[in-house]
Length: 328
Ligand code: F6P
Image 1 (cartoon, protein in one colour):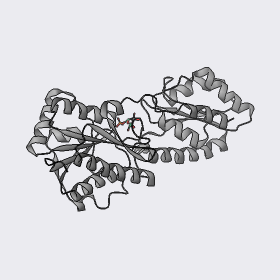
Image 2 (cartoon, helix red, strand yellow):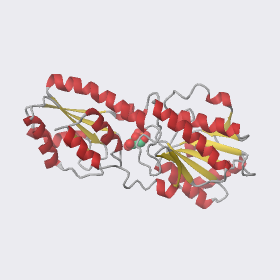
Image 3 (tube, helix red, strand yellow):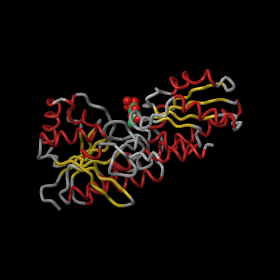
Image 4 (cartoon, protein in one colour):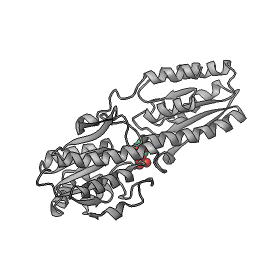
């Protein structure tokens, strides 16, 4: 073990994701197992700036593995984006004699950790990927993604029942401001007639063509999954653009919204979070820092923060083709 690692802190930051509690639990208990003191920071960087942190013991993470949300709460901090804000955060870490920080979150969280380490090189950080968007490189899946796509699939299955009963064309908007991962996976899982994601430029003409094809096949209903960040707009805008062409169907829109961020984590998310929480602490004890810990092909992988947040090329666009063929 690295000799000057005695006290670590853990926090969740950015959008919450189911499984974050399982990751916090794993960090706390692995830290304690290694003889470390573990502090929990409330509300991410915002709480750190205010010195809102307290010691955690094994009991403090009892009965949380199955709970959605985050017991440490989370926030998006504007103040931490400023040099003054980061100075305050650093002062709090020093005041509480924290040797290393474990940040659970997504690209904003890791960007923050990276800048903090550049400005204050004596701070060690490890990142754990926690976001429903699954838009980080260096891990096959982020914590929360599996639960989110299961939530979407469950909701869309229900919508499909009513869509089929009424011969309706349903535009369903799912989360993903910059990423189509949720839309693509859930679109395949529900057998959507079309999937619109920001990484492709499907275009209205192509969408109309796909829907006409469905009509010719005498489909009584159609489901179009729209990622909120699609270049054609959200589900309402897309529906507006095509509904005049399909008067044979009644057009409806459903925005799933924050239901996608809540709920009990799935088995996969609990296991992933437990493994990543454990590995993040182990990595710190071996002197690693500035890295996100992930799992690829069932192997633990460490990725520098600047690479993890690049989010290029992770989405498998071949899946779009598969989705198209399977909905013929
Ligand atoms: O958690 C990621 C994400 O769900 C994005 O897909 C979405 O655009 C964003 O968070 C919305 O989050 P909030 O409501 O917290 O601003």
